Image (cartoon, rainbow, N blue to C red):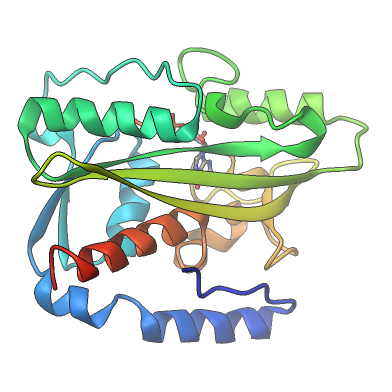
Length: 232
Ligand code: ITT
């Protein structure tokens, strides 16, 4: 369940932030989940930084590369966020047999029929260059005033019994006409969240973003699930 609601002013957003901070991290997780180790199946440093901040010190988050520097990411050949999240989590589970999760995410732009969607990382080419991806989006949206978009994340979690569990997060917003700010990663400098429409995530930075982002929503659902099951 998402506790975040749309805030129309900065002051109201700060109130939301304070409220969410008071609720999170889940106290039960903080107590029972101390030192819970999870492998995060990602090679994306931006996602990793955010996940560590969102999950907090109760969780020890390591990556496949920390466990095996030779680890090779699987091919993401699914057709949905859910399929790709499972591919990434399953590959880590098959290799290490440790509790793990993966995040498959992307930007869906209405005027582009939902693109780049699951192809967000490689939108402008195989080298996953954030700058080139942003340039491509801005070019495609040139002269288009309808700029609504959303970030979506599906997290796949695999625990000791090997069963996958899924958690989703979606955040509405709009695409800027040029870059604003340099914080965050990926498309952050061109994404205005609806909740704080005056600034992009590139300007707001992680402390604000991590209070209500698509990733925060999905990971919060995951910690609530862990609290109800493994850590009860
Ligand atoms: P892993 O598969 O190794 O986790 P990746 O970057 O390839 O890393 P995805 O396939 O899920 O991950 O692609 C997600 C892309 O969507 C990511 O590279 C960014 O370009 C974009 N993206 C996702 N979440 C974002 C966020 O919070 N802020 C900005 N861009 C984001």
